[in-house]
Each structure stands twice: as structure tokens, then as C-alpha cells.
Length: 402
Length: 195
Picture 1 (cartoon, each protein chain N blue to C red):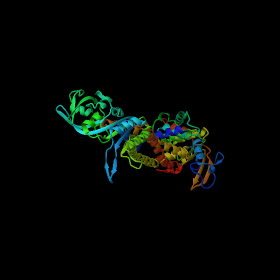
Picture 2 (picture 1 turned 180 degrees about the vertical axis):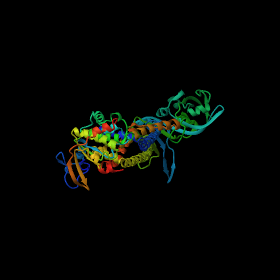
Picture 3 (picture 1 turned 45 degrees about the vertical axis):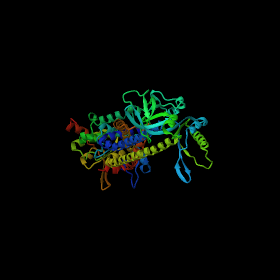
Picture 4 (picture 1 turned 90 degrees about the vertical axis):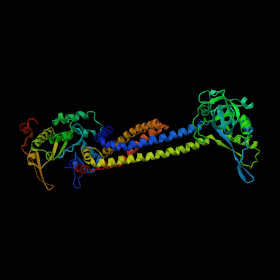
């Protein structure tokens, strides 16, 4: 019974190709928009997340905080290398620690010079950020102890200062202090946050930087990686305790440092991109609903136009439900075929965007399935009212209709 | 005519078919009755446009309750053959003459093997020669045992029946059997041997 009704519906769809096509267009655009918009949103989300992760995994960053001195709020840096060493020694949830001293300075190599950021770090820094050299080697704990004047160059610096040779073994001068280049880092690309090009920098042992370059005792930040994602909160409280002890803070005194948790940044970024995806998706969803109303429109016109046909069908023994099913199936088929074409069109658009504008997209199968089912639902939902009208027709009046 | 065909229900009076009063039947029961027991032939043919003769004739079979018949196509073909249209099965109504269209309509009415065939001015839109052809088909069906109720304004068409009921302003004024039925079969062969 139902198969023959589907056959009837398919026949009548095929008999009005132009009308069917135009109705489908609404759904095609709707589904295509939903899929491409959501995929672009998810692509952005994915990209931001992977950029944050490129900063390192299970990362905690300790910044010197502001303190209150005589009623005047000012930033005062009391963080030292000893703090970092203490954390590494005593915090059990912590895997790796590196103090970071950062200055901006002129770097000279032969006739070339460049203004870049000089970072004094310990070897742990590179493993925290899972960064390795493309040529040469990283400096070691031994270099830290001996205050070795060695440097590891970022890719951009290496390319600018030594455009035509391998810098390993050469000398660079930073604030007139000669450093021996021991390695060049692999390319990391542009970061999402401030700072831009992550490869535009030079790394030296932190002790050397403090003694030869900055002059002071303080470090700009301490980078810590927890043993695991789960231990990040433990690590954070351990660090807080150690830092407070180190800085002799009283119970009621506020922290003179702050800890930034990478998980929080990831969560925040994920939340904001999710809102973005949702926004794009709902705009596209509206167009899908408009497409559904288009179906209803056409089906209503079609019911009126086909009154005689309905009369004939009733006269030869079709029940009201038969007519109802026929019209619903027609609407559903139109919207589902439209859905499939829309999926193909949406994916095609994404591939095109990817090729031309290099937009990163993530096509999740879930959204494809949802868009398809939703288009089917739209068809049935908006097809129901016209179908109901058709099924309630009186056979005689329908037959007399001209 | 619509009441007899179960398309409409009487506002007063009773109409029973096969011993069941139509007034007590549901819409779906009426639809089933139209599907299985009654065949319709209209003055305006009432065929589905853009639909081949075969599909038109198949239509009542598609709405059968017992499920789609596997032999729907064969039954439709046989029915078209019975009205002499075996060569026109894949033509659409607009490609056929009025007489041919009416024969499709008859084939459609016959395809479910109805007991009762209702014809509402079946020859009203046809020329006299084609009318006789159609009447010949009706007479053959009648001889096979199908009851035919035919409404017409034309007395010469009425002459092909076995019983004549004359109505005026909604009342029966005459009801008498016709002693010698005029045969349309012979006349077709005489006047239109190629039909």
C-alpha cells in the first residue's frame, strides 16, 4: 500500500520538474548554508585550539603580579630564578619548569642586524613547548650552570641574519656580548595570541641572560608543565603555596604573582568559537525554515491546482489518508532530495573556499546527518497542512472544480 | 448519480448497496466501495493529464486495501485490450481522441471488476459515431453481467438500454423495460469497420 503511494508521489513529482526544482532550491540553499557555515565555524574552533595547544601541553604560566605598597598599587616583580628552582624541586605534580627572562635587543651578525626578542630559558622550556632544532642542538643544563654564551635561533632570525648559510657555529652579538649559535629551531608559525611570529626570537640559557644581558635578578615569567591534564589543579595549588612561602607572604596578604592555566584559555576560546558557530548555524537554519515555507507555499498552490486530480483519485477509491500520504511524501521527497543536493553543494562550497581562500573547515558527519534529517522534517512539517487540506476535499466538489 | 456512486450521501431517504445502508458507512468504507464495487465513467472523462493510458487504468489498483497487486500492470493491459486500446497504452490523454479517452475511462472503471458501472453522460462530449462505439462496449459489458446505470439526454443513446427510466425535474415519470434492445455492436461494424 505505502509503496504504491510512494510511487504515485514520485510520478507526480516528476511530472512537474520545473516546479519541483524551484521548490528544492530553497532547501538546497538552506542545507548547503547550514553545512558550510557550521563547518567554517568548527574549522575556526579547531584552528584556535590547535594554536593554543602549540604553546605547550598542560601549561601553567606564572606572571609576577601587582602588589600594594603604601596605598599605591604598582606592578612589582619579585619573581626570581630561585622560585623556579624551588617549584621544580618541591611541587610533585609538576613535570617541567623553566624561568623566562625576556628582553628586546639588537642582534648583530657580521654586517646584518635585527631587532628581536631575546629569551633566557632553561632546556625544559623546549620540551614544555615540544620544540626541537632543525639543525644543531639545544643548550643543556651544563650550559646553564656554566653561564655559557650560547644561543639557539628561531627560524625567522636565522633566515634574516644568515640568509645563505647554516648559522650553527657562527657568532652573533647581543648587546655587544658575543654568543655562539648552537642550534636553529624548527618553524612554529604565527601564534593566535599577541606576539605574532613565534619564530622571531633567540633563546639563551636563562642564567647567562640574567648575568650578561638584563642585569637584574628577576624573571619575567615561569613556565610550568603539569604531569597530566588531571594534575593541573594540584600543580596550581602547590605552586601557589611554594610561591607564597618563597615570598614570605602573610596569610592575609594577596598573591604577588598570578598563574594562568592553559585549560582555562582553551575552554574560553572554545566557548567563544562555539557561540560563533552557533550564530552562523542559526542564521543558516533560518534560511532552511524559509525554504520549508517555500515548500508549503508550492504545495498549497499545487493542491488547488490539482483539485480535479484529487477528485479523480477519490472517485476511483482513494481514501483521505491516501491523499494525505501522497502529498506528504511529495513534500518529504522534495525536501530530502533537496537536502542531499544541499549537502553536496555545501561540501563543494567548502572545498572551493579551502582552495581559494585557504579557509580551514571541519565537516563533521554529525552536522551532515542533522541537516539531512532536519530537511526531511521540514518537508513533512510544512507539507502536512497542504496535504491535510487535500485529504479533506469533498470528492464531488473536487471533480466539479475547473 | 453521485449518491448511487457513493461520492455523496443522501440528505433524506435511504440508499443501500449490497444490503448495507450507505448512511451508516464511514468515509473510508465508502472509498473502499468505490474502489471495489463501483466503476465510474464521466462525461468529461476525468483522466489524469500527463499520465499514460496504462497508468490511468492502473490507478484504482494502486488504492486497493489488500496491498499493491503484483499483476496490476497485466490487469490494466487486459482492461485496455477489452476496450480495444491495446495499441495506445503509452499515450497520454491529450494525444488521444475523445472516444479513445472515454475508452480509457471505461477501462479504468472496469479494471477492478466492478459489479456496477455508472456512466454519467458518457457520450455527451462525443460525436454520434463514437457514441455508438462506446455504447457497443457498454452493451458487451452488460452482456457479461455487469449492471450499468447510464444517464443521457439523447433518446437514441437511451435506445441501447434494456430498461428506461425517464426523469423530469428530479422525479421519475416513466419506468419501463425496453422490449427489443437496439444493438450497437452490429451498427459499429456496419458504419465504422476500421474502428
